[in-house]
Image 1 (cartoon, rainbow, N blue to C red):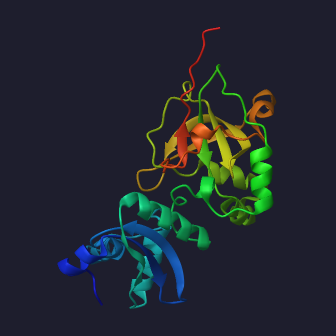
Image 2 (image 1 turned 30 degrees about the vertical axis):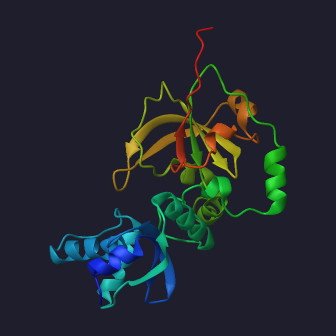
Image 3 (image 1 turned 90 degrees about the vertical axis):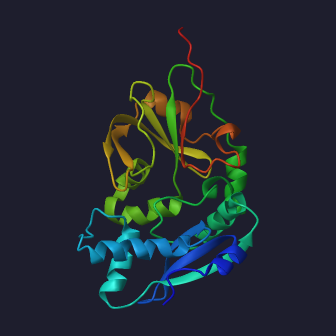
Length: 254
C-alpha cells in the first residue's frame, strides 16, 4: 500500500480534494482537502499511535476510531483523490464543501466551507429563507452565531430527542472561548435562519482542542427578537470558513 506520493506526483496534483473509504463496507467516512501527502496523514497518525501502544478510545475523534478499527481487522484505509489540479486553496474549499454535502454521516467534525450558506437546498427552502425578515442587530449584547446542518440535528434526534438541536449546537468547536458576559448568547442557525437561541452558562474543554458550551434556551423576550428570522448578509459572505462567528455589533451605553 502507498503511504506517500513521489515528489513529481505531488507537484502534478497540486491542491486536491480526497475521500477516505472504509474497506469493510465501502463507505466514505471522511472528506478533506490538501496538497502533498495530506491524504495519507490521518492513517499515518493512527498507525504511529498504535506502534507506540497509545490507546485510542471513546474520547478520540470518530475519524481516528474508524481508522483504528480498520487496522485492527488487518485492513488499510482506501484513499481516493476526488478532484486534483485545483488552482488554489479557496477552490479546494469549495469543492470539499460540495462533496461533504453529498455524503451523510461523515466523521468530519464540521461541515464544509460555506455548506450552510451556499450548499444543497430545496428551491422552496430558498424561497422561504430569502423572504424571511432579517433581524435587527442588537445594541444591548453580543452573541455567537453557530451554523449547523439540519441533517445532523435529525440524526441526533434518535439519541437526544427534542434536545438534539441544543446538543449539536453546543458541541464542539475549534475556537478560543470568550467571556459569557461579553458573548452571553449562541444563535443556532440552519439555512440562514435562526432556529433557536441559547443562553451560555460556561465553556468546557472538548475533544481535539475544541470547546463546547453548557447553557439553556434563552428567555422568551430574546427568542422573540431572533428566532425564525434571517441572519444579516454580513454573516454569510463567501470566504467565511468557520461555522462559528462572533458578532461585531457596536454596543450602546443607553
